[in-house]
Image 1 (spheres, rainbow, N blue to C red):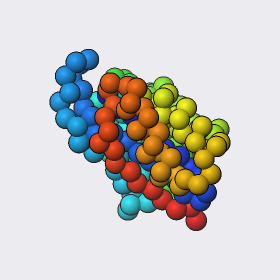
Image 2: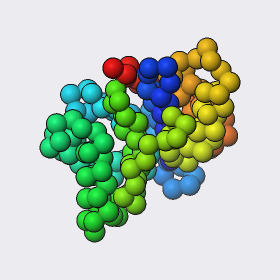
Image 3: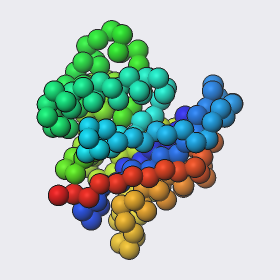
Image 4: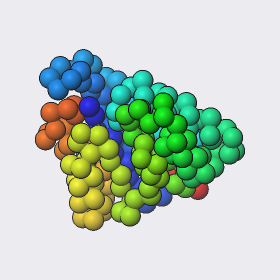
Length: 177
């Protein structure tokens, strides 16, 4: 399991995620997995929680949709979610994806949902609720931080609480146009 948190703040959208891979509920198999990636000519950043093979399948599907729709992230995400929901094979995939570019921040789920967060924060994974609460608190009360610092600290806080999240945190960000 893992925690991925993305924050849109002061002209920047950032994402942070830990690297823990857990087998079952008791074995930490890896602590440095890369769950944040750039796709579509480095213009879109994604982070995923769930099974790695499932997440890679979703990454490939999203990349294909981005190619089909000339990089239009919203359209590609909606088309991906529709395909995910309709295809019986894809319905078995167990992963969630956060995707953003220089304009949009989206959560894409296997239930066919494409959500843009109300508070400019979205988090997924086992520590997602902890990270989201921490990030919202920082957004409301810590004006001296960047989006990247908020996202990273939110995952750090989640790692202090959630046994399925570690402190091996990777970040990435994109400046808004």
